[in-house]
Length: 73
Image (cartoon, rainbow, N blue to C red; front, top):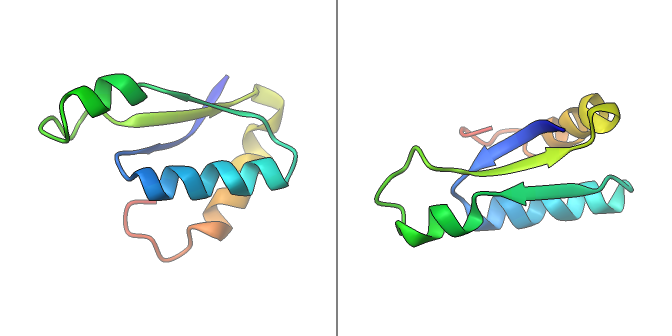
């Protein structure tokens, strides 16, 4: 598995999941509970989105295009 996105923004995370799903790439999100438990008080704990290694390059490219102009990207 390879990380393709790390964010505390639930809207960005949902959008990224939709982009990858539309492309047929299965994504797994980790650390959602941990990040939400601290309510943003610990900004270094981010939700991480992972995909299979073989989908990594394509997923990163899709997300780079979809999130273009986002300062956290």
